[in-house]
Image (cartoon, rainbow, N blue to C red; front, side):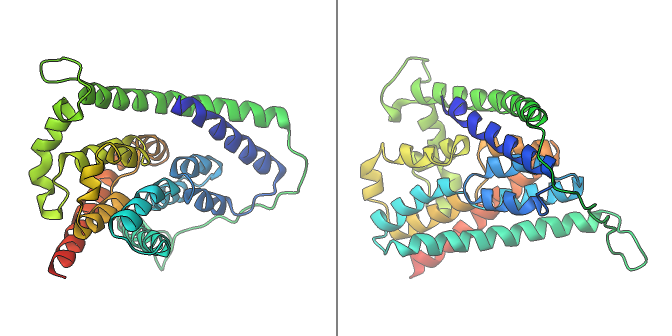
Amino acid sequence: MTLVSFLPQVFLLYFVLACVAESGLLRSKTLLSVLLGFGCTTLAVCSLSSVDDERKRKRMAVLLSFIPCSAMLPMLMLMLTTVMHVSFWWVFVVYFLSICIGLLFATFWNWTQDAQDRPCGAQGKWSCHPIPKRKLHFPNLWIALKQSFMKTLSFAKKILIAFIVSAFVITILARFTFAFRYTAQNEDSILFHICGMLSPVFVPIGLNNPAIICALLFGVIAKESAVSVLLLFPQIVAGMSAATAASLITFYTLYPVCVSCCVAVAAHCGKRTMPKLFAIQLAAAYIFSFIVYRICVIM
């Protein structure tokens, strides 16, 4: 149902972009993508289909994947206002800081990619082609509808496979024991035990509780799902220290994007780029969480 409710938004986005592109009205095609990125990264990356320059499209897809979307706000509010008991305005401060850090990593990523590519011209500058001026005219709605439908269908095919597979695997792991018996107790599930085995990895950053690890795994499917999982364990949330909450906020805002966004980024950057990007985001989240957690423990 989540995917079905998501597709009309994708179709509407593609339709608006097609109409704007057909009319010649849009001059800065990436500005709209950046604005959309603060709402939903997946929709923002999908909007890059209107960018003709392949290199620019890849750079923007990477940039958008580092911008935290609004789906992260519930987790920030839960940790900051409920656990750390600070003012609501700190939600905006932390969100702004996560955007700045994400932009720094995106800039570093694009800089390393530029170093690998061959520059043009005597001074090593990139060659750029002037954007041809287009006269404004009323768009062909039939062409816009047709293009929107085909792009939405292509997007749905790609995301459906990734979403169903990941959701199916995690659901099975979360509802069955190692004896393959159904259980309503989260603590008896395969997923909970797997998270328990992964807990030593998260000890240095203070996130070694299996419930927190489960929440982060569900967050890979959809960022807002992480909050729903945590709310299933109110005693863990209530007993969480400020250092753990700060570490969780840091890791949550920096760790890899959701499955739907991964599919969208892979479509624009290539299948080889996405694993590298995933690893960089995961490493950045771990390193920064370690620093934040250690500072909070000392203080």
